[in-house]
Structure formats: C-alpha cells, structure tokens
Image (cartoon, rainbow, N blue to C red):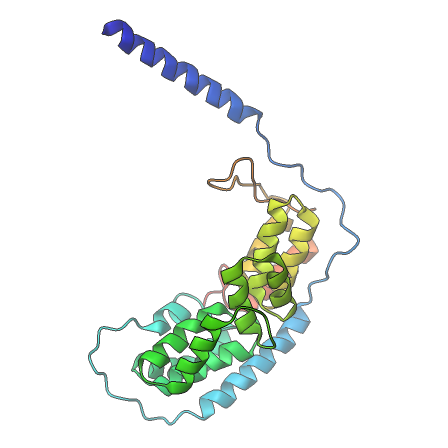
Length: 276
C-alpha cells in the first residue's frame, strides 16, 4: 500500500514538472512592429458630433415627459435604471443618461410608456445596444402593446432587414459571421466587437484591430478601452481562459490612436476615471 502511495506521489510530481515545462514553452504571438496600410483613423471630433446629435434627440424625448410619476406600487421589480445608469451609462454617452435620468426613474416606477420610449431611443441611435431589449420586456410586462409587438418581432426575426437593432439580435442568435458583418455595417457596435473576437480566433490580428476600431468609433466605450490598451507600449498579452494557446493580442504601438480611443471612451462616459 505504501509503495502504491509513493508511486502516485511520484507520478503527480512528474506530471507537474512536465506541465510546467510545457507551459514554459508556450508564448503569445509576436507583437506587430509596423502599422497596416488599411488602418482606420479614429476621429474623436466625429464622435463628439455624433454625441451632440444623440443628446439633442434625448432632450427632445425628455421634453415629452408628462412630469407626473406614478406612485410606487411596492412591487419587488428590478430597477433597470440601476443596471443602465448607476454603474456607468449604457444608454449612450454620460450626458445622455443625465438627460434621460428622470424618464428612466419613471420607467422604474412602472411607467410602461417611459420604458418603451427609452427602448425605442436606444434602438434608433448608434451603437444600437442590445441592452434595450430589457426595456421592451419591462414595458411589455407592464402592458404596453407596442413594446410587446416589437419584442416579439425581434425574437422571431431570422434575417437582417432594415432595422439595425433587430439585425444585431439575429447575429447574436445565429453566431453567423456574415450576419455579424451586416449588423456591424449597419452601425451595431457590439456586432463589430464580436467580429474582433472571430478575427482573433482566425489569427488575423490586423482584421481584429479594424473591427475593434469600428466598434470604438460607433461609440462602444468598452471597445475603445480595449483598443487603447492593445495599442499602448506597455500592452501585455493575456491568455484567454479556457482557450488553448489563445491570447489577447497587442497591436503595433500607436500612442496617438490609443489617446484618441481613450478620449472617445471618456467622453462616452464609461472610461476609466470618467464614470458617470
């Protein structure tokens, strides 16, 4: 019995040594040293124009608010505002969240029309975040017929038409690269970010960067933060958990574009040190 125990210990030690030796031979892919010729130029000024137009539309929506908030019904419902506003603005830029804060409070107070109005606002404006489905679900649960019809239409959709938001959900369900391409072209930032992951899995670092830049320019602050980190001189690849020999890439050093990406992330209100 003692010999068996000793044998098991020896096997475990040998296995551990072999695993460490194997791990020591694995290295992340080399960092590119030259910029690709097809590099997309990020434009913080273009983002500011987009941001200002979005805020103006948010103000128009907020101006239609009745000003009368329904009394608290005491229902133990999840406050959507906590998820979409409190921990960082997921409706767009931080100023957008400021403008829509009262309308969101109406939604949290069980105002179905307010939930539907904010959901429609998110659907109609880039980056067409899929998070808006939460608002349609809540509005539908509260009895808004329009919200129910739209939610059901999105859930039944099987191909991309003219609606970018609907196209984004078709892409998520199908996981089809061509559909993600369509949604990204239509302005769905999350679809572009998904294509970044697909390009990385295929080993195409340049294409990965192009998609991440596109997602950032459309106003996805997380994409901008990721892009800035990968462009920085101190970028370090990180092994992707659960993925054998796959690493998050570092792109060719470009501090100017990294700064532009951080600027967009901060002005979107979701960057590090710029939280709403």
